[in-house]
Image (cartoon, rainbow, N blue to C red; front, side):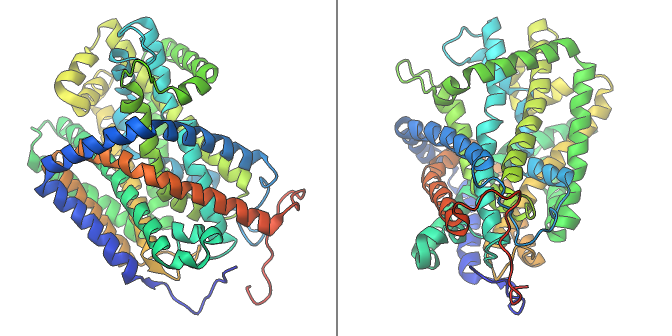
Length: 523
């Protein structure tokens, strides 16, 4: 095991920082200078990946879900992610808020109103478009794409990272260190470098997708609220203001920045969801939500593996495989971040907490907002499908919000929520990128403020590149492409976790909470 050396201060690791930062700048430049070529290449390669490896994504996703449940309820569930009997570092509310805000970000606000509407027009399982069945299954499918499998993909690497940091006390917040029980000294060589580079690429792809979805939405909400025309200048202004928010949060660090933003965000999200529930057709929303929960529980295995190999309608490729690729690309990042904030919890508490809080939050958001949008469409109150086809997601979300009572006040609240959601996702990304490029960083320490700021502005530059290049589809394609090798990395993480748990505890798993005792020298 690695000891926590108080004599060695954290310092910038140039061998990790320079290549990683260079990759971020290269991504931004390619998006700006070669957008058409990048889009063509990425689209062709994405079709190749989904066409030949879709089976791998669905098996891996479902297998991770089963493995996460085994970790929680199996013989290692009571292993404590700490070397002492200390209580958890963060309260349950702050812990859940940071995970939820970082784990879903602006994407949930972007898709919660419109995703069931897309499925109404292009339904799964060869249902008739705009039929009652399409409405019911579309409402359920959105919740399936954001709940149990995605949060299981986050939970397992979180346990592995937390064990590495808080039990083994290894001085690097890197996935290559998590894989050390399998790789040995090869984790310090080219193999470890390849793993960490793939993590950075996946992070940039996942963050780029969030940026591509988030900046136009926040810009549309802001300009509508202020009553001004949306232009390139206003979008740049949004990026500038947003950079100040998440740059300041990243600079402040976990406890003074990210935690406070997340706490604000979770209360605001709950309040807005309740407003939609109470101001909208409450009985219809609750009925649709209960119906969708039953549909998902009854058909969970079927939809988890449905690839439509005969008719090839394209629904699994366009939606399920994209989402699984997005979650896989983000999984190592979320593992690093969630693992860092989970000290003091048991494996069972960590896995069930991540899966339960994350899934419940997403299901509540999607079921309530999605049912409200479906009611507007089905009742003829607002032509949501037509708006989506003609104006895109941001304008449609604004139009839906404006149908609520006290629309300007609620629009202001949604604008603030979107700003903070985007900030909390990206400042956690900047925090992890800074941690990857820092040497001698224990689980209790944070990377340098200048390092965190550098990554905050690098991500802002990618946002500008996406804005100028309109390259969201390219980034989405790259996310799925990068998810393919990351499945191998995640598999290494799972195997490494099993090996270290078996080596440290073996069959000693009957106690209520198991702790690796620190020696006097380590203390």
